[in-house]
Length: 455
Image (cartoon, rainbow, N blue to C red; front, side):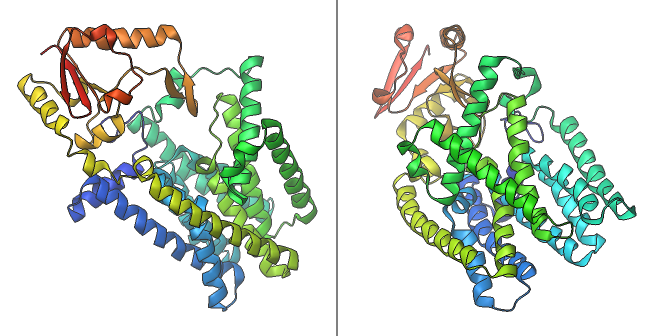
């Protein structure tokens, strides 16, 4: 994982927040993360409420609460806040940026624009996606005021975001390992790769749209071509509506414009980097702006059609949230820290600790099939994963070459043979890893777990 502020896997924003909450309230990492998620859930609803007030300019507090609660309990929103960790912090930052942006557009108060620019600069330290606010905030003054002195306001986000990005790269170095330049191959011009990436992202875009509006449960019923068609149809509708309803001084046009810029900007960068990670976690900022756009339009036009769509959308999401919570509860070990503390009570970990202390080894000398839970056990010191046939690369798990797999497997076996490493396999009878090549190692079976070493 690396030591703060350097990490090849995580931007430092969320880990810093968790560490701060842990220190202030004397909590464990898991409890701190849980407290943050619960707090963010209520904070996001409160911020949404103030955004709704700014948008609607009405005092029907019941309707305002309905809209803010509706946004907060949508299933895609709930999963971002409670399951995506760093994305939950980015989610709150997006809401704050929307709030100060709309305050600036309404009041023309420079203070609000500066705050929005500083928040966008800080968001880069949470997720790289925060860079999308740079061109947007730089162009909005030109779009809203035209080519005049006020358009120079675009220099504020250029300066703040530019400084933030330069500092980030120089302090943190490599940011996200699977996106780093020296481990990434730009294959845009290779027809086989670029076409596969394009079709995959277009299909995933259609799936994401279905996921936002209906449910991901529908994915298995349709083909890739259907989701590509959904994406293209939605794109045509959005662009047609933007052109027809485009207004220079229209706040809702700016919100719709951001949704389109974010969505297609992300697809464009994904194509250039041969990256395939289009899902609710990467696309929710575009949806947030789009939802507030719909509320603005609904408030101004009082259209029966828009009102009906909002009601239907709310009803469908309430249903999905209900079923989703049941499903989430059943699969809690996969989606949260629920069983981390229980995992720490495994008897095999006592033996593993004794083995490490007796032979002067560190957590980095361990190989395991359960990095997810073993890392928290060692207070988030890094441990190694056993060789696997699939690795997370360019946005999804992909099969590695046989040569690469054989190489890392041989390296692990050599370290075990030379007493530089130990291997622990949890629930080893269910594991698919073949450890026949190291059968000569000492085997220690504790319950359902297996420890292999040369000690």
